Length: 85
Ligand SMILES: [Zn+2]
Image 1 (cartoon, rainbow, N blue to C red):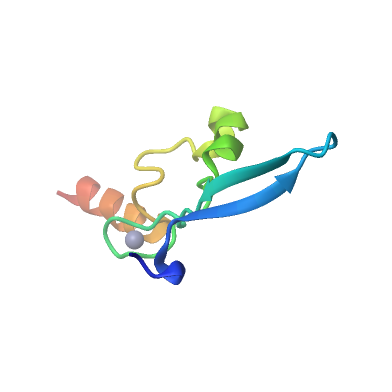
Image 2: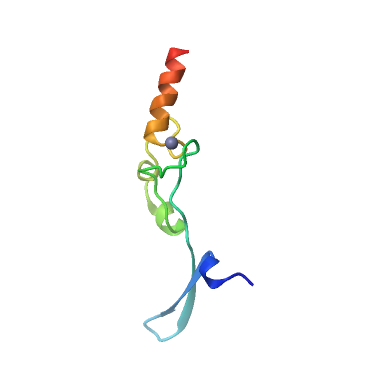
């Protein structure tokens, strides 16, 4: 069995107004990282899938090339290399 500290799903007990008990399973998510250098990519929505799906498309990702894959520094150098070649 997996150690409790390494488990991805986290259960929370909730009680509804009528008194019935509920068990909610929430999955932990990590912040998105750059594919090139591994730094945290800013401006990208993360968290529970419920929360992210309620956001509009423009709130989830920046509207530029390689958004969510490359950090701003790596994108800058990639564009420079592409233009110079
Ligand atoms: Zn990077």
